[in-house]
Length: 237
Image 1 (cartoon, rainbow, N blue to C red):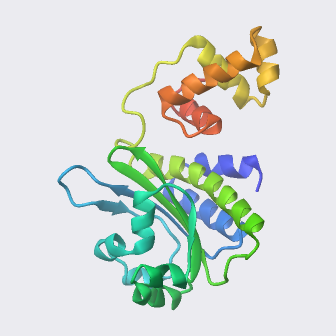
Image 2 (image 1 turned 60 degrees about the vertical axis):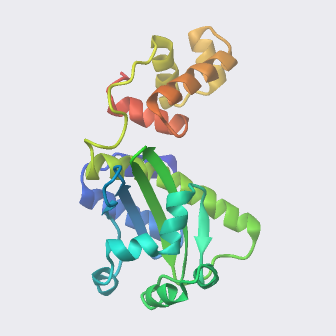
Image 3 (image 1 turned 45 degrees about the vertical axis):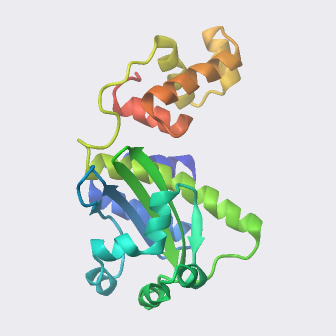
């Protein structure tokens, strides 16, 4: 996948379009199923899920929020945002081997999962699943983690925007300084920090400082995410 493919996911205009693009990306990375979910946990209220996936219909029928809340993969994602993989051993160690047996019968034998905290009460949960075991080579596994984490960032942006646009994201329009906006705008146009520095007549270190400041104000995960959020807020020309 290239940057345009990832950008297409973030630009999805409706749920069906997002579903189709995530499913295509899932196959590209050698997986069978995806889950792109939001969990809402307001204080004193039972957690609620918004689910977008391509699970088989017979497996979908047996899923419910109660089961999700005791699933060890779900518990790990809710507690830690680092990518990890699950398999039968993972479930057995957690004392939930029977849950793996249920999922494995539908093709969910192993997968890579991670979460992204979108706000104090909203978390994005993302995972790709398949029948075949992951490669044993650590370098290959690490590359898969990186690729899927990158996909999750774009999936989080689109899923949050489409499934709960009034709850997820920055609560009010962030105020960026003109030079912060310019740094993001040049970055969006494909310029490197050195090229941006030349355009703005400043050092590349100062460019990076502007970008970092904009990321903090936008609550962005990285520069690419900051550009996407700034565009959504109409801050870029």
